[in-house]
Image: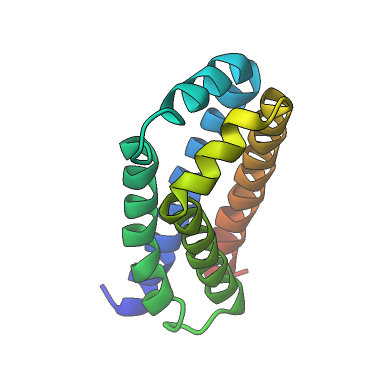
Length: 145
């Protein structure tokens, strides 16, 4: 198996699994926004950020790094932009965890937290469907017409 076919398989699998995770999690967040808000308010009482968020960011980062390398074999602007976008999301979310003191104060004082959580879930679902389209694009790009 050459690097080009491995890259195609990697991005197809990565986009598909990430899309399913985002659609499922986003739907769950939309439906259970009050429970998620209570969870966040409970975690805002702790000095350290939630380990669940740290784990999610760690694994997203670890699975994004191969994409950065594989986006150059063959060179694809779409994969490169998606990988850079993913790294930017990890960086910005990591900043919120590093500045947990300010984040937890904001979580405690926000009355619109369930609405913000619902909007975040809707964004996750939309990004998940966009990733399914990217997976379809990767599959159709490699099949000869």
